[in-house]
Image 1 (cartoon, helix red, strand yellow):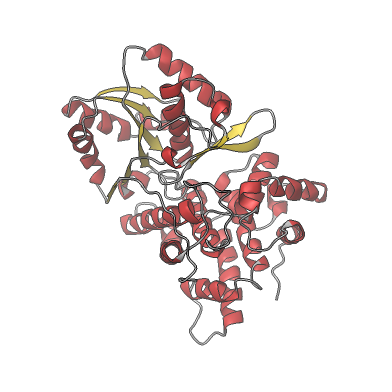
Image 2 (image 1 turned 135 degrees about the vertical axis):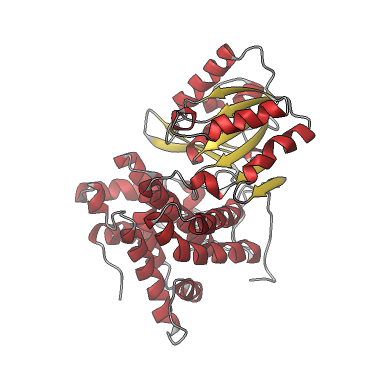
Length: 414
């Protein structure tokens, strides 16, 4: 694969990582000349239960950066939420000439901030910018401070939204949507309850495994785009994804079982960031396509909808990615004496066991899905063309059908 790699990568210009290192953000912003910050978060972080926003405001005050807090973020932001947030900020903070946005929270808050970085600079409605190549120019500078280890929105070129009319997920896409500054402080994840830790952690594992196995860069259809958001897997993305996979298998059980374990939280913070670096260049495919379809049907959380499909998609790829799957098996603890096929199956089985161990259903029946829903899941999954086109098996329809059937019945091939 090395000889044929066609690498294209776009990353943040500044990354701050480490326990307690969020304290370095305000001085950096001051040095770079920023003066007026919009903080985008949700009510948990502005409540008495969390000191995160309070501490951030104190740090900004200390370097004389003016600020306004919008705390109306919600999980899975809708187009309407983005529109209303834009109107409220324009109304309540009309006297502030914002020159940067600081997103604090999970991937949903970061995605909301990405949309605001466009609409506050260029006006218009969020729907004006849905799709690829729709950004009129560089958005407002965005700083991402994730409080979960999983979504990866702090690195990616997309903002994922829910369209109310259809409950389907749509995206604003463009490399300029990637945050300019990323602050990954594992201490910020200590407040995550077990369910959030599980959802985010399996999301990170999904990003890592899916990008590790996805379409090769030499075969990826960039559609002639000279500045592609995604461009298929290459040697660099596989190196990062591989280390992320290893870290997830090692640290997620502890982070889930003992959220106060800072070493496990740091391991998962690294895993999430590395997975995001990988998939934010290589791209994703069937797991996310089908997960979006399931979320539209059940409104279940993103991490859990990824989790239920992940082992079955892996199983479907065993014939075309067996050597890679065996490597994942060894990352998951398969003994060196295992033959390639055994190690590949171990990867699938151990992944499903990890999903189950953190309290996520391992069949579609666990989400209330019925036989009647299976065709809808397949058709809606296939409809996410930007993901389906990167699936290593083409055409994808028959494989998608087999994956959905297996996920419903809970069957892994022998």
